[in-house]
Image 1 (cartoon, each protein chain N blue to C red):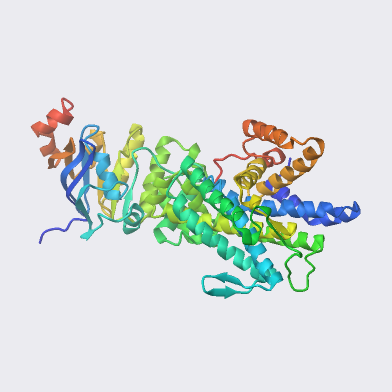
Image 2 (cartoon, rainbow over the protein chains, first blue to last red; image 1 turned 180 degrees about the horizontal axis):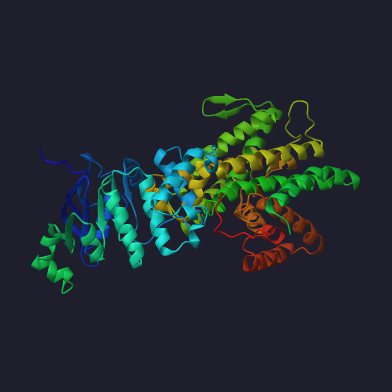
Length: 250
Length: 330
């Protein structure tokens, strides 16, 4: 029996004026896998993530989450359905404490965010769950710190914990290693390896060392089109990929 | 220098004792003046919910303040004239009972806020300022051209509206009515700020993308907050109409919106009690400078200029030791 994908992208296209950011793109993400998306700057990787997460409307094509057509759903609806993402540039609430960022996302996940009465700060269930999530990314000691005082690496970790707080069905990580030092990158790699068993990950990353260490499958985009898809060996040996992206690196 | 909690407590105690000072100084005008301060503070707290905590610069809150005033005035006008209010084929009796008037005010202000908010919140920044201003100005010009209720000359109420067993014409009684409303509004807004709605609103102010990515619809959050804000400001307008026993299109004008905004900025946005302090200083400056010079607004402008340049966190920040940092959340 054929495996059913958690995420299916079907002939997705998006243009900005004359520029085709995504051109008739097909892509799948299956359970227990990390699918890396690589390509030069401007190849349409982030545009694709924005369309999957609902932050950008596609011109044509469909997006399916567990066989449900979510192409016309809003970003917040998709988030509640289990599409969790991190942003290319850390996007957290800087004026909040670390734990309050998590309280916000837990509340968003459960709905009821229009309730004007329940005290969110004294909700023990949320506090406990928030600490559990911070434990996963090793941030419990900074739970009560203001996010604005966190280092870049810690903000990245917080973003990961925010994504996990949504009880996701899939994770979209847009350059999560960007700006991280070697040790932090390695921590992320270990974390993603542990995560993929529970949640499949679509990973956009420029750090090829991390990509090759993590990805079960790699797809390469160039000028909005998919030019190759396969495992590490296949990608490394693909002449076109060598030409447009990897160059002499390998 | 003291803690914010202590200052807040002192503000409430001071206000509670105002009628006593008024009696000791044998000047009942002080109580009336402070009723005005309390009412403007309520309007300011309403605006501050969306301005300070939600980052929505509404320059049209006079619409709600004025609507509250007109609902109060119109209901009382029809009660006093024994004329029913006619809306299409329906007829309604007027009333002079404040409990009903407040309910009607809250309902009508909420509906107006829903309408204005629905359209205004499709825009942001300067466009949001302009569209809220435009809505308020529409109501302003409508009220001018509505002769039934006095048009440009406004509408006088012979007596204040009533509450059973209370003499609302007594300045001290009326002051305490306003004071109780202030306490209720403070408690309500405090609840909201600690609630899911409040935390979502604060988050929307900073980063809507993050808010959407955790399943929250920012438009809904902002609209509900806008409605609550409008209802609170409408209630203040109702009290203001009863305080003065007079309403005119002036309370719907952009100057009124500006006045509410100024007292919020003066006292300190992002702080619950900021508008109370702002209203206090605004009215005291108006009285004090107004006694010295006709051009008191010039000097008020000068003071606000200094504050914006050197104390963005408002007057509250001068009096408390935990200096406001916009990066403080809960």
